[in-house]
Length: 183
Ligand code: NI
Image (cartoon, rainbow, N blue to C red; front, side, top):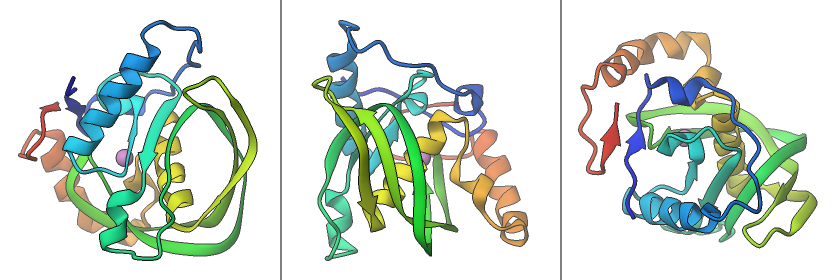
């Protein structure tokens, strides 16, 4: 089932999220719906707060990046109750976007690699799994959503001035992406 994507300005995107009950009977359906919603909107990641649920859960699929970045590692995965244990490596500048902030892109600097502990959709625990490059970047971006953050929070102040108007427009509902939204 396609779910509406909650848009910047909605308070659900600013709350920190709660642990997921791995035995929750509705969990698999929720994950399936999130993948369907993400693919429809042509995203590479989607976090539960973006569909209105403050749960520590996000999904990624880096496959669509292949068109722009031929060297991208293809990774499709579900991250439940994740903890980023470490961020390391070089500073990596990347032009980010977000389905909850339509029509905005901005450069964000983050570390190039991470170690993350999480459970997958089969209830298997992954201890301090290492990811780098584009895949790490998607995970870092989605992880922020669980903490009530969005990527523009991390944009350098001088560039944020330029975004201010656009952010206000989005929060006021002056956006028309070609997927279902909730303001
Ligand atoms: Ni996002």
